[in-house]
Image (cartoon, rainbow, N blue to C red; front, side):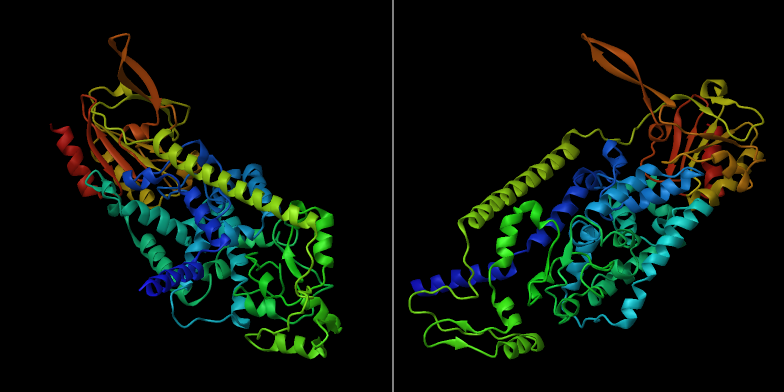
Length: 570
């Protein structure tokens, strides 16, 4: 009975040993958690907009994901190019250059959540599509997408084209991450109401990418990801990654055939620096860049000069193992090890006096000491990384300033700068007391906003006693005045203005020294009128200055007129 129990636990232990995650997999999971440490966002259905959102994470991770703590470098690049005009977006380009020079496509192999998701999908047991000349040719498609959809079109048409039409991270993390939350399906905040053909296209494309990732290793990374294309340009020069010692390389091709990416040689622009080729190299020609940073140069040289079985096989020398055992004709053995798919282990008779064979190099005390030091450094690094992740989870979910939806009865007093007027004028809320005010929030990149804009103009023409104003709400600075005229809205009777971060004065009541006092605070008018993370957004203010109607998402003219008449006739 004891033997059965012992064997049972041994089997369990063996299963865990066989299935334990590699260090690379642990780093991938860690990066995904760190990028999306704002777990509270998944509960509330809102996007975190704190200070860390100004910083870019290295991998592809959508800004609009409820859990995102930073910005996506690809989205930030497109937005920067859209607003750059004649100025270069030095900040974003500098961040990308820094990531690329240090890591290059090591980011793809270790720090990208999208890459992790594709690798997990590829583990599903199905027939697999092997790489070939066709896949290698299609791998250049991402460079075309980089030039066209990330650089040229955003500059010319002022539109974040790749994020808007292609990016599956935005569809999965941003759109679906917000849509599945019940808080975003209420009558006044219905995200589903603004879904259209664009979302249908992106959803179908996302599903296609997910399905292809099951059959084809890292389908999106290999053929469609412009961020990987950017990092690929720096693979040769990056401080970290894999490198090939050509003096040791025998051109056996094991590294290229073992790699699932479309590489032509180790470390080229398609290599994601995962390091899996290191273990299959028969001559130990592949290693990590920067190894001398962690090992003293003398120790590295000593390790490299220790005789190994591979080096002996390469030289074709004879090894004296014992008086009875001698290995000869080793070149033929080396050839067999390269040609067979699963090399058989060569059994070597043990020496009588425990002589150390050529496959077991002597380890000097200095090398052993350095290895112990490096093990301690590794443990310390994991401890610091764990502390950082725990700190991020605690901060974002308990202490980070969070923009929650504001529920007010009275519309806050505000003053905004008008656009489509002959001279500079401001819109003061207090000047329109006793009137019904319809406020529409829009942005130049928002297709549903542009579709419904004529409805508000029609409402203004049909009801002259009603004040209709459209406030432009956007993350980046742009020449909104020119955009209004380019879209043909310059002669509209309705008013256009820019919402700013300090436009609305909210009066809050707080207790100070035992007395309740009113304390004014500044907030974005969009948030004050029930906005969260999505455009278009509409609010109707009654004659007494109270918020009578709020709608997040598109609205048709008939419904808009009906809701306005309810307020007008009340």
